[in-house]
Length: 148
Image (tube, rainbow, N blue to C red; front, side, top):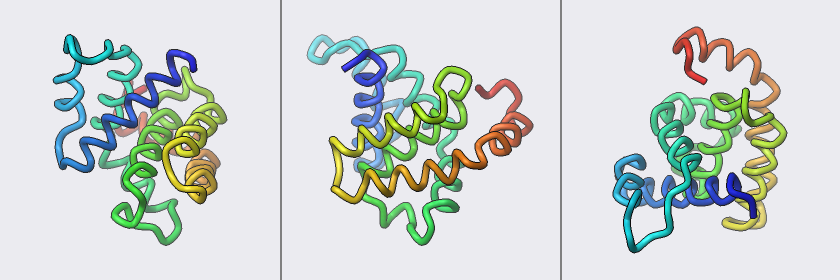
């Protein structure tokens, strides 16, 4: 598993734990950075957790809008964490992560961490959003210049 794959997995772990505990993911992660009892935290993990947290309201709005009949509360918590990370990479990291890679990485994560139905669900939601990704990215940049 490459460094970015490990960073994504660790970011999902932090996002998932923060979601279950009702805590801020950045605060949770900061308690782990430099901890002698835990493995070092990859810089990309920090980037992902900070990015998802900073854009979580818009990410969640887009997920609800494109999940076709699913509320955030109905989604398994792991799927929610993976979708948030995948959507962040898809829309806010597109200069550095191609859309197909963002979707594939999210699907691979959810295959390893969630139910048998989850990969198809994650692929469908992120695929729908990727189809309008260029329009969404320009809207996001207009609302938040330099946000990539």
